[in-house]
Length: 161
Image 1: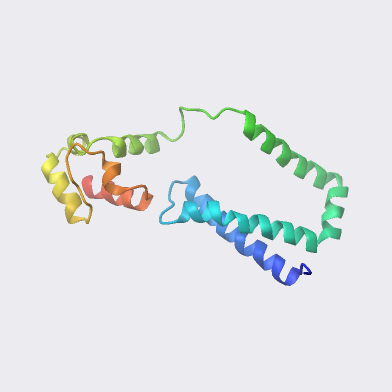
Image 2 (image 1 turned 180 degrees about the vertical axis):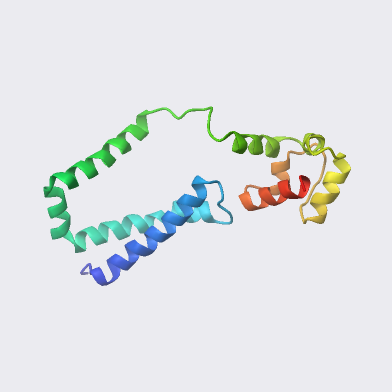
């Protein structure tokens, strides 16, 4: 089978579009539905596309590797890749508003109700009216919303209207 630019380049562009959009959504914690899963699993299409695109454009790829600028750029990313395996991830830090939001989502409905200056019964009724299945005031809000960010934002907006 011959690797052709006619399909290798569109495969690379399409996979890049998917990876770029889902990656940006995940970065800003705005991913919903299957964004994360699509990013993880369809990332293999990006790998395949880049490999095929590189093979189809091997002469140009070798030219880039032969130039100092190409070597430096690819070298920087190689160093970043290696460092990503060894530099520990900071446990604390990040956007304080996001951390506060996650803390509220992890809190029981009773605590969320107190923060919203409402009774637990009123919060549970509001959530149920918005389509959420609330079983008890002791359950964490995230167990009501599930893992989807869109559902989590909807629940927070319902409670803190």
